[in-house]
Amino acid sequence: MTRDELENLLKKQKAAFRSSPPDYKKRMQSLKKLSVIVDENKERLIEAVSSDFGFRSHQETLVLEIFPLHDEIRHAMKNLRSWTKRRKVSGSWFLLPASAYYQYQPLGSVGIMGAWNYQVLLTLSPLVDAVAAGNHAIIKPSEIAPASAEVLRKIINSNFPEEYIHCVTGDTELAKDFSSMPFDHLFFTGSTQVGKMIMAAAAPNLTPVTLELGGKSPAIIHSSYPLARAAKRIMAGKLFNSGQTCVAPDYVILPKELNNEFQDAVKKVVNKFYPDIANNEHYSHIISDKHYQRLSRLLEDAQSKGASVVEISSGTASIEGKIFTPKLVFNVNDKMEIMQQEIFGPILPVVNLENFEEAVEYVNEKPKPLALYYFDKSKKRINWLLRHTLSGGVTINDTVYHLAQHNLPFGGVGSSGVGHYHGFDGFKTFSKKRPVMHQKRLAASDLLHPPYTGLKNKLIRFLGKLAKR
Image 1 (cartoon, rainbow, N blue to C red):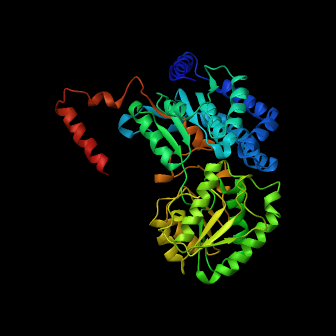
Image 2: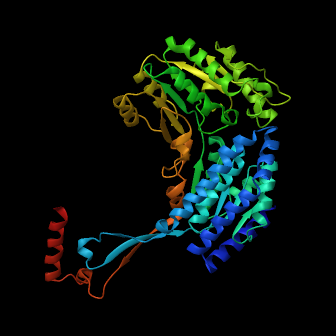
């Protein structure tokens, strides 16, 4: 699609929206249709995703993309009527008898840019929120995963009119054009580096943006917590999609004396999860040779600077199949690239800090992470950590699953993102919270108009005294 074609599509959508903004009935019908077409085409989507990766297990795509998407649609449909209701608020006393309320209204035509690592979920999940809020939308899946992008294009465009919901596909040039369009809101999921470019491209139009980015999400293990349980839950979150997950634990912090025990626990759980990993039907491949080589360079750089790399599976790596086996990395330091950039793969550095306070200080010195994981049974320490750290989200004694809580917002802070979505927070992201005041025929505010005679001056002084109470 050319830039001119994209501009014309956006103009057509905006005109259609102005003519007839989607009401509650249309929104519900559209959400139901989206659920139906995803269900009818789930095998096509799963096969396309696997093709993009070279291999990704059928079950992983079902569990991590298709099921969560259906559940999100169900949640939106269940709650949409209450989300769209007017909400009365107390009016200011000096404006009585005026009433006041607010209501959520759709923004118009919004743009959504998906991400390759979970192409189906990260393209259609924000679409669910946008449709629930009553918007028209143009979606652009990631060009890095072209097979799944093409299936999305076909199933969306064959089921929705282009002036309402439309999917466009193309290369990085289209992505640049897309991000510079005067959407009423722009939603992007991807890396922090690209997120900066998206925000810059949107700025000339003053297009509001939601940026769902990433970063280095730490997992802190207190010495008193059962290490085997922590290892199991950390590696489960780490190895979903072979580590290619924005909220995957990026590195672990624990006392040095626990290194050997942690290594043994990790080896045990990884080989239980993925026996014969090189031939395992549940272990995902790396998306491309480029990303495979990037992970290899991270290990080489770490080893050249004194790190020790431990293979923790029973298999071997394979560039031909893009199978990158899980590895622990010990003796790391902040000069290593592995500790400077988001890993986005099955490599887990171990940072040795001897106490809880040191671990918190270390995390706070870094850019704010998208997720923070803490393993401890002490409510006092957990509450202290929550007060003294800031991250996009937190899971205590587990990893990753906070993003599946529909009634919790999902989003980063600082370099890990701007804005939130999921559930009501996603509905709000794609809405204008519009304030309304309704004045009556006789109003106290009429007494505040000029000219300010002696009686009105007395009234103003009286109001000033009341306001200070």
